[in-house]
Image (tube, rainbow, N blue to C red; front, top):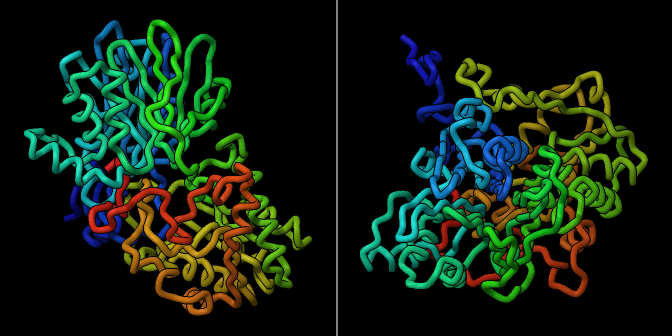
Length: 501
């Protein structure tokens, strides 16, 4: 008899553990998925001073859903009382009107989360809510604390008892143990952290926003009438009709209370190092980071790729969705026709109906299809944003060949991804990164391409733009060049986790 899955859905007897070995589909298990893409980190959203804070947070988190699809949560504050709800699944699955109506208050923080192996559980869903001497404290973050294991061990030796495996809980313990007032306690706590993070912290009467001294993770501030809005990406502002004001700066702490907004610092800005993968892949193309539009930056990456690696071909196609902008740029620069040679099925991401074994073995076709009438008999340039393990690239190249493409030339709009990230990206073990063990020619053979080219380091930096006079023009490129902007104790750092874990 088939097993019964969540919501009464039947789980077929032949269900593959790769796809369903937990309580719900897509539960993180550390196994290879159909697509070996890097996982979006997490997303945060905050509201201060709006009577409909919970509903605004719902729509804001929905706009940030691409940054985390495994769990989400919202916490509101109403005259000193906290109300919160968290759950596993997408925003639209976790919240309904009744749940949102119960979240009263004019202040809120919310979170969407992706986790890595072993951490897919409700207890780690954010915002995390704690009791401390001055009342309730809610915390959510996007990023990873490199020195979290050291701080956690120190706190445990001093008697702290942790309720979750989340890095985020460390900050709550540091705040609670400080004898200073809240703002100074938060500053002292942040001063101890090493890593990439964007925090939102809420108490009964304050909302605090802060970014790490390098600015690895994006965090922006906007206004909606008299209310202040915070989000990981500006696309969330567009959704709710808020106006962008500015990016939260590295090392900056913003405090909102009944007296308005205070802008302070907990640390000087160190080497600016915005995650390059935000520009390449993670952020939505309609978002801006440091006032640079992602779609435009990705188009420039594609144009630069064309200048560096022209190949005579009949059509250009992009791997949906994150590579479409770069493919358009490549096509415009070369004059080769851009075509929708690959189509993504947007409705297979979360389902309780498992495919048959035969379809599972060709699982990429469940999510991606080649358009035979477009690619058949054609020399195809396939644009993608990155190659992680190489398994996805091989599958897609073979899809195009099976559909009749006579040649498949792969162009990647980033340099070879060969080093683990310690600042909030879910990366495989270093040995599983194909670029860490194989040359470009060996990768080409492994993915069955006729030719392969990665965007150069300088080409990526120039395409993004950024800050003149700063190293890498303000980008973190450590996943490409192993030049980590902060001290990393490799034996302790959790390369495959984010503080959302």
